[in-house]
Length: 186
Image (cartoon, rainbow, N blue to C red; front, side, top):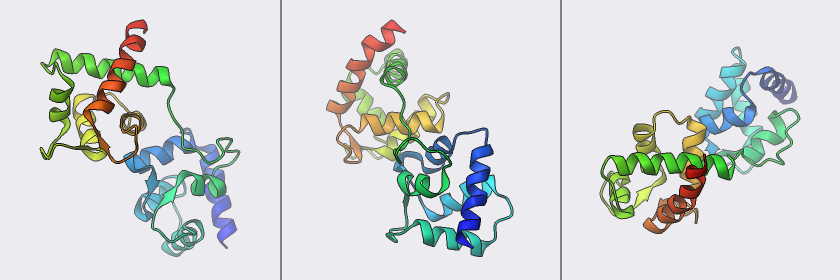
């Protein structure tokens, strides 16, 4: 029964106009993993008539470690037809990242944020001295509304260079300085 359900989802994902990797990233956001409810929403978006029991069975079979999160490798291994990524979540090119961050920096400077410390304070909604990934994602949704969820997730993940869940002044500085040359060339 599980394999028949997976086959239906694989087929629907293969026919989807949006690549499965992008659907995954848009559903997972900055966390880069799907919760059970996010997984169910994604799957119901491509196969409308799945039963709660069918969704439960698929979740149990996919979430092998029972941690309650589904990373892209687990998702792709079973559900993505012809996935050539080796289970890696999609990423944007360095050039694309540089252009987006350069535009954001230019926009922030035009709004009066001249130092990296001021930019960090702008993103630090709870004013605790740290910018979490979710705070940055919220700021980007407001400051750069033209970015897709995929682009926001990628920018947030890459700005958190040490992957500790918080963005520091040093990480902002490194990304913004590296992007200035890329953006100037674009």
